[in-house]
Length: 207
Image 1: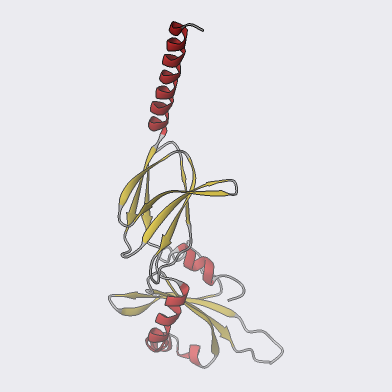
Image 2 (image 1 turned 90 degrees about the vertical axis):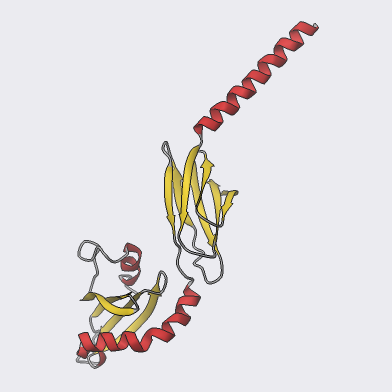
């Protein structure tokens, strides 16, 4: 192989690599992470079958360039909810609102400081809730400004099961307010102001 042939092959190879690099960069999409919760770090992982590969990390609102595919945004930080947030990059740029809220352990601690105020609001709105029902599982959500519980009706006979009602409260400007009246099922259609994940959790049959 003479020198001219080697140079020609090298030039073609370099051109092909450059074309691939340009094509790859053009295929990348801008993903904006709007991080509205302080003191957290967000790690972006690409998910390929059973493999997870770290691709980026942010501590504040910013942009990352990602190729098409499936990803997770994983929060980390003191008292933060670390549940991965799945998202998919397609043909267009994408903006994600990142506010994972607090961990269940921290919310459980916070609940103990709010139970007296919450009980007072429920008793004022539904006096029979304290006498004709027993409280089921209680849970704070998000930043501790949403509360959900079940009210289990005391059956007239010991061998019967009482009806189970769901109830959600929301804290606004430091004050707890009834967000939903007691219902056997809380639907997103009837209560669109309540985050859907809260309704799904409180509607679980084991609550």
